[in-house]
Amino acid sequence: MTTTLIILLVVTSIAKLITAPPNIVVVWLTKRYAMHQKLVAQEASITFNGTELSPEKKEAFATYFSEANFLEKYYIFPGNEENFLHPETDNTPFVIKTKQGKKDITMYVYKEENHIDVVKQAKKKVISYSLLAPKLNEFSVTQ
Image (cartoon, rainbow, N blue to C red; front, side, top):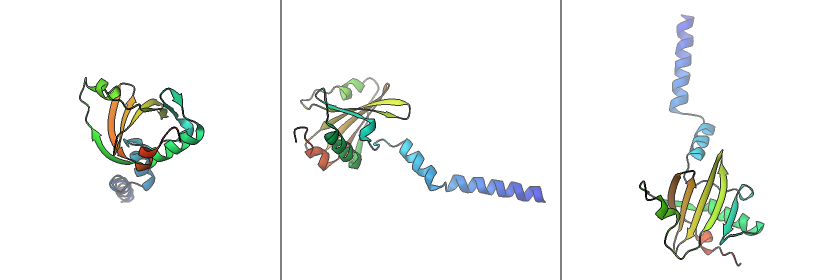
């Protein structure tokens, strides 16, 4: 009788954890698999046209980038990655190099007229998406 009660209690606890995990687990999972992650200025190298941004501008850029709202993901078909990494455009991208866990990540940020395009590369995996970031759209290196 006692063994049955203990087994029932353990199975019920496991089922409860699976169906309604604690908030800390949910936050960890969503941060781990989020496409647009927060950018920490101290952990990132941000360059524009080959020159690194000053610490004040780097902090402002990181804040504006982190506050941006995700709009949509662009689907990249195998073999088409190079068109996203090096598009034929007159826009000079901001290049962000940072780490996510153990992976080195490079992001190319292109300012468009009404949105921001981001191309994120981790090893051979390339992801592209757009952001709505009015402050980042107004951001200028020469301010």
